[in-house]
Image (cartoon, rainbow, N blue to C red; front, top):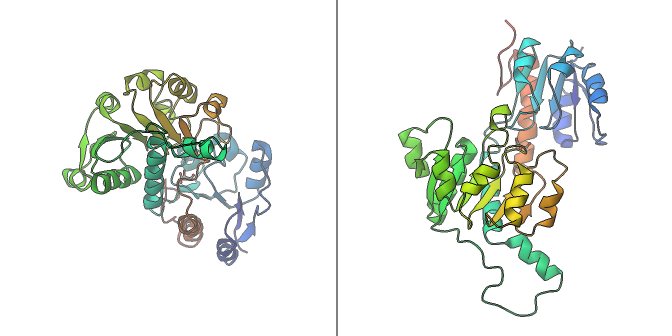
Length: 324
Ligand code: DGY
């Protein structure tokens, strides 16, 4: 008998077809919204699951799912998982690193440029029919080339953004991370390690790429925003909750920083109402990894993780070690 898996959210038909060759698959192509209770009840009837970054697998959920053996997240971030609890329950956790690095770095840079050069604000102005004539100061923004790029969180995506900034735009790159990069990687990224305080004080553009955890909650709040230059921009492509969105909306309204670009939000898909009313913010709905090719690669890697676990006993890109 094939193991039973559930695919929590809609996914490429090709990937479902691959999964059906190995598993008895429950899909959710209709995009039925789960409550925590209905999700838990569904999961409890399966041996494995393919989740996205929003489907919770925590101690409470796991208690109701003794049959569950493996959950593959179609995301590099896994703050929807309690990995310790998964290990304790003998459930293999996996994510999709690497395949989205360059695409997400592209988007981080796009959001930085859109924010600095006031792309959406000026487009809305044009669409409202308010463009009457050219003016020297119309939507004059912040320089990107030659400026100082500060990257908080220097994993693979942070390094991708650093390379784009340093090599493509002649930016001075500074970074802060839990651990310092090797001298070789620092040279490759042309990046200089600094304290968080120095980064906030000196960067013209701050990009956040830190993973979310209790320890990184509100890494950027009112105090940190106050340390930034009034001309600086802030980009968050990491996770909601890394930034205190209420404090950010205040800083944008009072122009204590110039602008922000946000792809992720506290409590998304809800967006703090104050962020919707300030003009100097570019808002996108958590799409940093959303190129067709990359989403396909993520879906295939998540599927391969399940196939590998159920045929070889180990996911290809595991987050924990389970079993004998
Ligand atoms: C990721 O892979 O973590 C992206 O944010 C999509 O959830």
